[in-house]
Length: 302
Image (cartoon, rainbow, N blue to C red):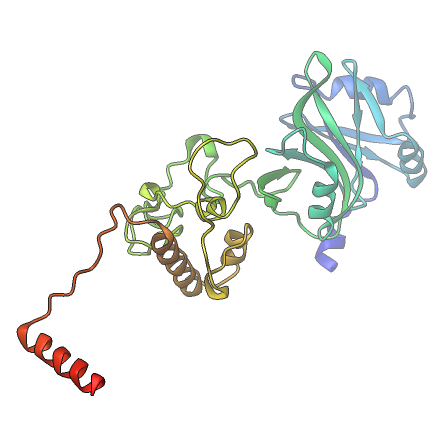
């Protein structure tokens, strides 16, 4: 907690300004609002990152009432360094997905105050797919967080950026060269002896043709008005029953339990498939067996 408090700076504000802006432009605006005895400095850290320093607490409180500066026709909000307030940019999360899911994902890391969508530059109202969330962080938010079925990337000042492909911090996805295993479908190595993560077979996962929905669809009735031969539902006992959410429940087991479950599912699917050609089994009895059967029949008649 002491180290966290040491990072709090009660006279400082931070913001990102438009590309190409120098510290001269925000200074001209601020000196019209604050006197030289109140404004201590405006520092440019490069890449559009700026900090404003004040000399008194009264000037800070005045700026907190409206911490927005208009630079090159853009309203820029400055964040107070004496709080854990952050602006997080949300990447790789579809426009049509609800914001509530993002707020729930951030719930264990921060308190969310607002969430807005960024527009495409020059086209107001046309969303770019990037969201901006104003939060008070209670602990560090990871750069990559799973939200539903999406891997969302959170960007804010101080975050350790990770490659969205392999999860390493030494590079970005555009130049990722980390090998991906053909067997286990994981990054870090090219080949291993692990069974297929889909069906527990011996083939690489990239060559696997097994699909979980194949068994489920066999149990569904044909649609109304469908023409063709009807398919009898597959009979399964409780030990091999498959639910639509079976894939998710398998993921919560260990690797050994997952492999055993997948192997059982695969065997049930193969057993449920009709044979290509039905051939009646013919018993080839020997002469001794025929004589024994004849004796038994005569004894039963007597």
